[in-house]
Structure formats: C-alpha cells, structure tokens
Image 1 (cartoon, rainbow, N blue to C red):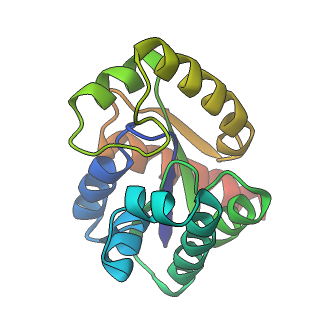
Image 2: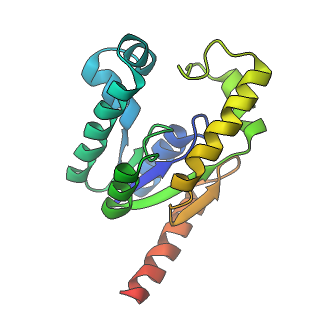
Length: 175
C-alpha cells in the first residue's frame, strides 16, 4: 500500500509521514527530499536558478517514480497535488490523505521552521498572510479531492490509520 500525504507547506506532512511509516512498519519517502538528494541542491535553489515550472516537471517525475514503491508513506510537497495529472496519479496509486491547517497555524509554524519556502521568502507578515490565503484557495480544489482529510494540528498517526482503515472498508463495500 502507498499512503500519500498532501497539503499546504508547514502542515507537518514530513513529520507525520515519518511517524506513520514507523508505526505501520513502512518506509517513508519525502518527494522534496528525494529531489534535493538527486539534484544536490535545495528546492529553493532549484526554483531560483531555473524556474518553478522546471521544478514542477522534476517533481512530477519523482512523484511518478513512487508507483514502484510499496508499503510506504509518501510526504509530498505542498504543490505536488495541485494539477490535474498529479492529483489523478495520487488518487489512482494510493490512499490520499489531506492534512489541513488554518492560515494562522501555518504562519506560526512557518515562523519556527528551519526550512524556508521560496514562494514566501521576502514577504512581510501581512503579505505572507495574503499570499497563503490566496494560494490555499487556489490549491483547495485539488486538496479537497483527497478521500481522507484530517485537521493536522493535533493529529496523531493512530487517527490517520483509523481513517485509512475506515476508508478502505467503505471502498471495499463499493467494489
């Protein structure tokens, strides 16, 4: 089984992915980390040196490589699910879990994060809030296609496992 975690930056996809994988005895795969390892640079540097469009092409290739993996929890980048082809791939190749968080919580996490996000660098607090609000609204139609959605702030791996099992039992009844 492949479990894909999607959602906006800073919602905890990587942290939860590691915990969930550990609890299930699965491997953990982080698409952003895989890109950084493969290209020997950060996501920020890739986007700044080339373009966001070039990065999205690389991101799609890495995402598609996950079809070969099994018994894995895959933490995706914030924008990975946000085009028709990628969201369809995710839905066709695993169980997709949308991790949600409020804009205020995203901003708080962003302030304490060690990683910077290229799309948010150089913005003051009010510009960040406006950007995140607009960006989240643009991405929500894709995120909302996930069959499982969870409020990420206080979510536990146990809750996600329970939701996945519930989803699988309902899906098996339909087929």
